[in-house]
Image 1 (cartoon, rainbow, N blue to C red):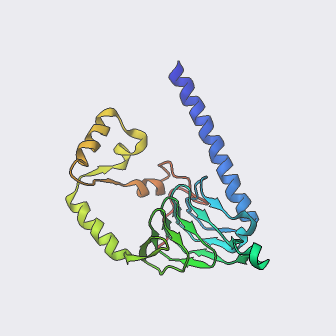
Image 2: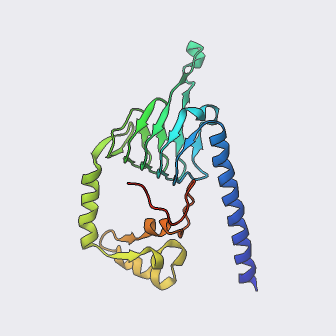
Image 3: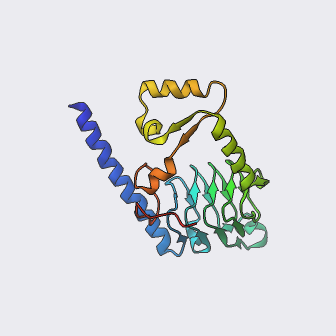
Length: 214
């Protein structure tokens, strides 16, 4: 009985949070911010609402928890009686790691990955992996993907449909713990599942069953 009530409450909470999230996206767009299709913009992403009409996020971008996107800088205001504003353009298929800070006047990508805890204070080139304070190019996207393709052929792999965070039994958790005892492992099929309408990653303007462009 308690389990049934818990599941019902959880579903109602999930629907409420999803509605609130979509209202937030719509509000940002009504203020002039461009948010493309298939964007994962978590609730924890701090957006400079005062100047969000200067911010553009392309299709299929993703943000880790607690990222910050700034379109203005008022640090010099006390000394110059002036603050800086600048455009922020995040091109399509960019992915920003947890707690990345994006400063005004920069462009990222397309197809650029930014590592967690980075500060983007200058424009980052397309198809690269960048990290640091300030963020700099670490390698090309193809070099990064080639390394993981090689590892995928060698290391343990587990299907997202069976080993995703929402389907982990104690036995499956034990399997994953054993698998990473001597190195990393991979959970595969998560993005494909999203495109089919599964998973738990909410994305803007996305109709399940449509194909990701490119």
